[in-house]
Length: 139
Image 1: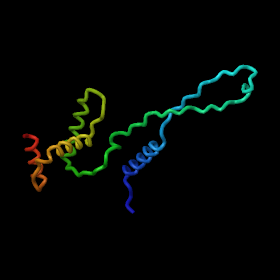
Image 2: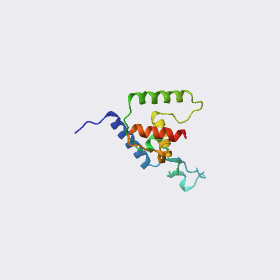
Image 3: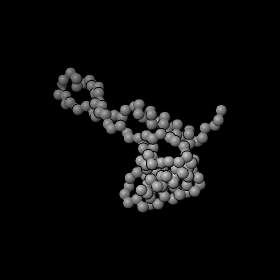
Image 4: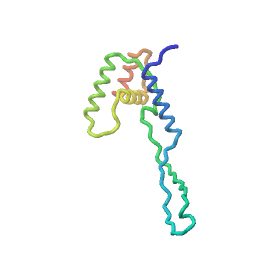
Protein backbone atom coordinates (compact mmCIF):
# COMPACT_ATOMS: atom_id res chain seq x y z
CA UNK A 1 0.00 0.00 0.00
CA UNK A 2 1.53 3.38 -0.96
CA UNK A 3 2.39 5.78 1.84
CA UNK A 4 0.37 8.97 2.18
CA UNK A 5 2.08 12.32 1.84
CA UNK A 6 2.10 14.58 4.89
CA UNK A 7 0.07 17.20 3.00
CA UNK A 8 -2.63 14.63 2.23
CA UNK A 9 -2.78 13.63 5.90
CA UNK A 10 -3.04 17.25 7.01
CA UNK A 11 -5.73 17.98 4.41
CA UNK A 12 -7.69 14.93 5.57
CA UNK A 13 -7.39 16.07 9.20
CA UNK A 14 -8.52 19.59 8.26
CA UNK A 15 -11.48 18.26 6.27
CA UNK A 16 -12.50 16.07 9.23
CA UNK A 17 -12.38 18.97 11.66
CA UNK A 18 -14.32 21.25 9.30
CA UNK A 19 -16.98 18.63 8.63
CA UNK A 20 -17.41 17.93 12.35
CA UNK A 21 -17.84 21.66 12.98
CA UNK A 22 -20.49 21.77 10.28
CA UNK A 23 -22.40 18.90 11.87
CA UNK A 24 -22.54 20.60 15.26
CA UNK A 25 -24.32 23.95 14.84
CA UNK A 26 -22.93 26.69 17.00
CA UNK A 27 -25.31 28.21 19.46
CA UNK A 28 -25.01 30.92 22.03
CA UNK A 29 -26.51 30.61 25.47
CA UNK A 30 -28.72 33.30 26.96
CA UNK A 31 -29.56 32.79 30.63
CA UNK A 32 -33.21 32.77 31.54
CA UNK A 33 -34.38 35.92 33.30
CA UNK A 34 -34.09 35.77 37.08
CA UNK A 35 -37.29 35.94 39.02
CA UNK A 36 -37.43 37.40 42.46
CA UNK A 37 -38.97 35.27 45.16
CA UNK A 38 -40.87 36.71 48.06
CA UNK A 39 -39.63 35.56 51.44
CA UNK A 40 -41.78 32.82 52.86
CA UNK A 41 -42.98 31.49 49.53
CA UNK A 42 -42.87 27.74 48.97
CA UNK A 43 -40.33 27.85 46.15
CA UNK A 44 -37.87 30.01 48.05
CA UNK A 45 -36.03 26.97 49.45
CA UNK A 46 -36.18 24.96 46.23
CA UNK A 47 -33.62 25.14 43.48
CA UNK A 48 -35.14 26.03 40.16
CA UNK A 49 -33.61 24.54 37.07
CA UNK A 50 -33.30 27.14 34.40
CA UNK A 51 -33.19 26.09 30.81
CA UNK A 52 -30.93 28.36 28.81
CA UNK A 53 -32.42 29.81 25.67
CA UNK A 54 -30.49 28.74 22.62
CA UNK A 55 -30.13 31.10 19.72
CA UNK A 56 -28.54 30.16 16.47
CA UNK A 57 -25.46 32.13 15.61
CA UNK A 58 -24.01 32.59 12.20
CA UNK A 59 -22.42 29.49 10.77
CA UNK A 60 -18.69 29.85 10.42
CA UNK A 61 -17.64 30.67 6.91
CA UNK A 62 -15.23 28.23 5.31
CA UNK A 63 -11.96 29.51 3.94
CA UNK A 64 -12.22 29.99 0.19
CA UNK A 65 -9.75 27.23 -0.63
CA UNK A 66 -11.95 24.66 1.13
CA UNK A 67 -14.89 25.51 -1.10
CA UNK A 68 -12.90 24.80 -4.27
CA UNK A 69 -12.17 21.51 -6.00
CA UNK A 70 -8.59 20.24 -6.02
CA UNK A 71 -6.82 19.85 -9.37
CA UNK A 72 -3.14 19.13 -9.91
CA UNK A 73 -1.21 20.74 -12.72
CA UNK A 74 2.34 20.28 -13.93
CA UNK A 75 4.27 23.48 -14.56
CA UNK A 76 7.79 24.14 -15.79
CA UNK A 77 10.36 25.61 -13.42
CA UNK A 78 10.23 28.89 -15.37
CA UNK A 79 6.44 29.05 -15.04
CA UNK A 80 6.63 28.38 -11.29
CA UNK A 81 9.30 31.04 -10.80
CA UNK A 82 7.36 33.62 -12.80
CA UNK A 83 4.15 32.78 -10.96
CA UNK A 84 5.86 33.17 -7.58
CA UNK A 85 7.41 36.50 -8.60
CA UNK A 86 4.04 37.87 -9.77
CA UNK A 87 2.33 36.69 -6.58
CA UNK A 88 4.97 38.35 -4.39
CA UNK A 89 4.84 41.60 -6.37
CA UNK A 90 1.05 41.78 -6.14
CA UNK A 91 1.04 41.02 -2.42
CA UNK A 92 3.68 43.68 -1.74
CA UNK A 93 1.72 46.31 -3.67
CA UNK A 94 -1.58 45.57 -1.92
CA UNK A 95 -2.76 48.77 -0.25
CA UNK A 96 -5.63 47.27 1.68
CA UNK A 97 -6.03 44.12 3.67
CA UNK A 98 -8.12 41.43 2.13
CA UNK A 99 -7.85 38.11 0.47
CA UNK A 100 -4.25 36.98 0.18
CA UNK A 101 -3.11 36.50 -3.39
CA UNK A 102 -1.58 33.08 -3.99
CA UNK A 103 -0.21 31.19 -6.96
CA UNK A 104 -3.56 29.39 -7.06
CA UNK A 105 -5.39 32.74 -7.19
CA UNK A 106 -3.43 33.70 -10.30
CA UNK A 107 -4.00 30.30 -11.89
CA UNK A 108 -7.77 30.65 -11.33
CA UNK A 109 -7.70 34.14 -12.89
CA UNK A 110 -5.83 32.77 -15.92
CA UNK A 111 -8.33 29.92 -16.26
CA UNK A 112 -11.25 32.39 -16.17
CA UNK A 113 -9.61 34.36 -18.98
CA UNK A 114 -9.05 31.14 -20.94
CA UNK A 115 -12.71 30.18 -20.50
CA UNK A 116 -13.83 33.66 -21.56
CA UNK A 117 -11.88 33.40 -24.84
CA UNK A 118 -12.34 29.65 -25.39
CA UNK A 119 -14.45 30.10 -28.54
CA UNK A 120 -11.46 31.70 -30.26
CA UNK A 121 -9.00 28.93 -29.40
CA UNK A 122 -7.73 26.73 -32.19
CA UNK A 123 -4.85 24.36 -32.62
CA UNK A 124 -3.77 20.87 -31.70
CA UNK A 125 -0.52 21.56 -29.83
CA UNK A 126 0.20 23.61 -26.74
CA UNK A 127 2.13 26.12 -28.83
CA UNK A 128 -0.72 26.55 -31.35
CA UNK A 129 -3.26 26.95 -28.56
CA UNK A 130 -1.06 29.54 -26.86
CA UNK A 131 -0.64 31.53 -30.08
CA UNK A 132 -4.39 31.50 -30.78
CA UNK A 133 -5.05 32.59 -27.19
CA UNK A 134 -2.59 35.48 -27.49
CA UNK A 135 -4.33 36.58 -30.69
CA UNK A 136 -7.73 36.32 -28.99
CA UNK A 137 -6.81 38.54 -26.04
CA UNK A 138 -5.00 41.08 -28.23
CA UNK A 139 -7.99 41.57 -30.55
